[in-house]
Length: 358
Image (cartoon, rainbow, N blue to C red; front, side, top):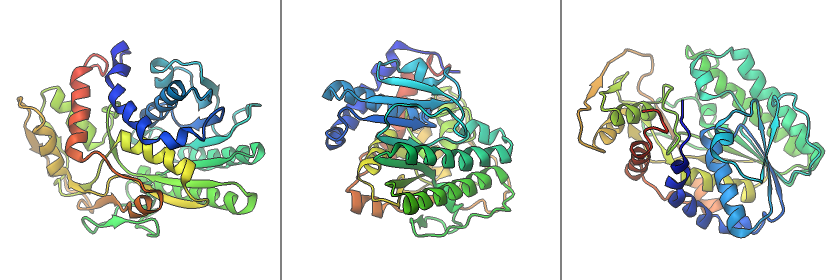
């Protein structure tokens, strides 16, 4: 449970100044525009919403921000109070359409990561992602929005078992609908079906839509209470506990810092081609074992690395995007390497222990 700290937002001023500076040309297109965000009340949402708030203040944009949420008691409402924010309370599958004009939509509504790892009913998960996407696309069509961005996931590829292979947008992937890890399989299949819906609406309704396939990320507000290795490692390190690897540690992952993610998503929203897909993430892979060492080297304390060699099928796998398309077509860059990203995230945890209840 996060405790609200008046200093937390201030601690990230440098990061958000960077984002605003790197996206300056975007804000020239945003004056007096209205944005609708779905699925943006947590980790991703904070970074996007805070960026809109800061840009609005700096450039006097007079924008409106509508946020669809299942409950008003959310992270955004607790941390970011601003006159541009308007909450729409409802379910993505059947919410009451606002009468306001909407110019841009960022659609990321899905089940939360915590719900995924708590094994939420897979049929409910499919319904939220697929039926929810169809409903928001109908809304987009009705409102004649300028642009729609769908936040998809690298999970549509599955996990490639060739270590260090990077997944490109044209790859079919290795997603297995009969995977023993049903929760992640359902997520990937549902996201893929939602992408199909986006493409269909783009082709048949003259709507400009782009897809961002997001991989794995690190930065302040990273969830620490679910089974993501990097979050668990950082939480244990700052708490002076042992860092536990629940595998051989040979699988390969990559991590993009949240300032880079925010810049990339906004760039795809405004400049991404219609009916096109862009991978979003770092293309620099790291083994889970090396990741644990990097986290442990952030500070000298009593933490040690403990490996529990739990035998799993296909324990050696990669989950790394190829981002050459995003870099070439949209001229996007990755500013922060993993070492720097981990350090920035760790220092934020140390400086805001009470906020994170550590």
